[in-house]
Image (cartoon, rainbow, N blue to C red; front, top):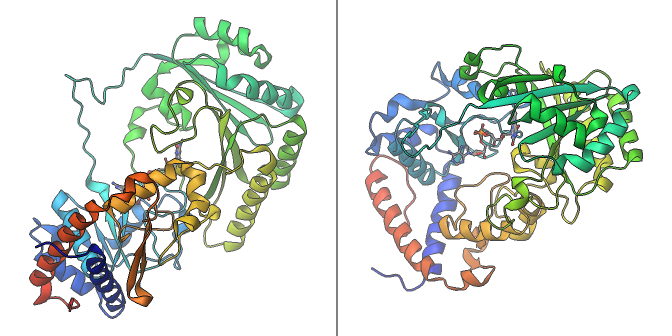
Length: 470
Ligand SMILES: Cc1cc2nc3c(=O)[nH]c(=O)nc-3n(C[C@H](O)[C@H](O)[C@H](O)COP(=O)(O)OP(=O)(O)OC[C@H]3O[C@@H](n4cnc5c(N)ncnc54)[C@H](O)[C@@H]3O)c2cc1C
């Protein structure tokens, strides 16, 4: 059956959503659990954990990489599902929609702001902890990493050893060095130059003597190892064994806060002086500012090719990281967060602008968040343009096609361009860009969605409290 207008259907579905969501406050997770049982999903009960389950806390905490979010006041999920099959994921999504619960999807749990396991509204975590197979297709050479010889060096220079002059030089050459050489710079009260080179010492030393002689690199500073060994070395692991890569618990459980910037121009010498001062004031607390050179392949990919837009024209990515041992001491956390905010604010004149760009992997909720309810594209642009530049608009268009009612959402999720206003029981929609002028997909989507929910509700009606649609 074809519906006369997609808007009517949106209103109905929208009303259902709002009813379901308000009803969820009186529901407990029992109805959600019953709903899961009703789905035709093999052995789902074996992968469902509620607070009454003895494994609930250990599973929840296992992938909380940032201990800032281990506190008692951090919102906890009603249920954790650790799927083994796609059907477990499908069942969780269906039941969450029916019972007005939010979903948080967690892989490694490394998100800087914990968005993969925190929600202000009642929620369920889909924890992909059991999705850990690696398939290597030798025939097509997919997921195959050639070991090859790799050179790594790590040299530190203090202010007395001309760190400021070396950083000035680094800013001018790092993005233009050989494509097989990346020198990362880490600033604290001194400068640490850490590099990975895909080749031998005989090639690296002459290259450094030609392009960056001021660093004074000698053969003794370099270590030859395979690429896989370099991954262990680069994270600063004290272990030399590759077995450490199989360890799933973090070796340094800590609380942290991260921020990011991109540099299009070098920080002047006077600017570096202020950075040294800030690190001096921070004392011996664990904090650093890291500069990853861009250039190379990053310059060759057009901005519009992939969602990640920060390509040609950037000298480097800047990451700020501040970490502390929390142990319930909020004042320590507040002090450290204040410090990182200060250095970020100090860096404003030197960083990219209009917008001041940010790196999604270093998630930072300070740059802007969505509302708990409807969020306009304009509001979301506050943070969205920083992460995605012009690609944000395209991402919002895709989001509107696949999830117009914005079921999958969190503090920095891509917004739907459809405006849903439950308070006035009406729906207005707003599209951006030429390609969205054709709304035919909406009819198709709404028809599919309507019959999908109808079937699900009929199935679940006898066992769960689902609001009637008329
Ligand atoms: C110690 C540490 C070191 C880091 N080093 C670097 C670094 O060197 N370079 C760098 O670029 N980044 C780095 N990061 C950042 C890291 O790359 C990002 O936080 C990344 O998003 C982590 O992925 P995850 O799966 O562990 O995160 P999660 O916290 O599990 O997920 C991150 C986001 O993706 C969503 N998500 C997860 N799985 C799925 C899925 N299957 N489907 C849909 N959505 C999903 C989550 O809901 C959340 O929004 C580091 C982080 C930490 C904690």
